[in-house]
Image 1: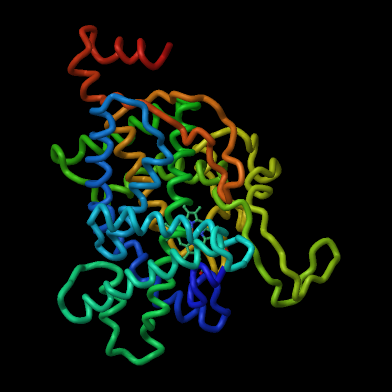
Image 2: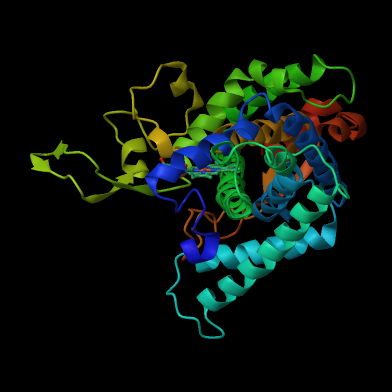
Length: 382
Ligand code: HEM
């Protein structure tokens, strides 16, 4: 894995350096720092949803979300807006991601070989950006800038270039597919559970109405989305985007009488999230189950402990903004109800990618000869 994402990546560094790198990477992911992200992401999402709705064609939620989360992350991390550069970086990141668990043979044509080549191209691109920032040719208020502003700090209070570049790549790879898949599952679950969808829309419309016409979301608005937060939680519980995660037992502890110090263990999140002794009717999508407090370690979609997901806040914020724009602006029909999963994917995803067609709520009210309710009945409640 280190050959693909880099040996200084959070995913690969040993415990001693992990703590330091993680601390230095964490600040731009705090809730405070995410407030700019909320507005920028909301703006991007607003435009793109409007565009796909105006085309009046079916589109794949997964592909849409992969692109929008990728572009938003590159904007937040490095302020990249140029479409062709974004496409090139996305292509290379996908190739690196495919190489992460491949057999390490450097023979042309193999996934590993392609991954190493793509990684080299990405590192060159990141290096050029860092040089342009240092020379003063380029300045943006973003994650990269906040890292470079520490240039004059002592070594233990800053990251070197290799650490910055490996972790830029790591965050894109760790954040894009996971968040996009989770957003896709939220659309699927809400489509199958209209009561939850209606309740969510009611809450989101009240947030919309509380704001000046056309205003973008602010971080504070997310605090009034209590039902939406439960929808996010339930989506993550049911979809188990990361099915399991590895650990090494550093100290002695016993499982069913066996002492496992030194063992490599996989924590099976699905098993925990589908355990009927923890979650009543675990296969039922029921956001309201989160009205009650969870027992410790019974809800672990982002892992737990010192290696818990670094992007936890960013992922939640992204999903909340997405649900807000989708449900307060549109209704949708799922155009392919096939529930089979993509084969060979590390992350559970619908093979169809969940194609949908959007109808703007606003248009519904304006164009319906019988008023909004009648038209809604025709199109969605049949
Ligand atoms: C719904 C979306 C996401 C899910 C379900 C998710 C889930 C996870 C899980 C289960 C882990 C392993 C935790 C452990 O071993 O205890 C992890 C680690 C990680 N995630 Fe996420 N993640 C998501 C989004 C993101 C985003 C948006 C980013 C970055 C921008 C990100 C960056 C990372 C990083 C860097 C790690 C490694 C942390 C470390 O080893 O210290 N993730 N994630």
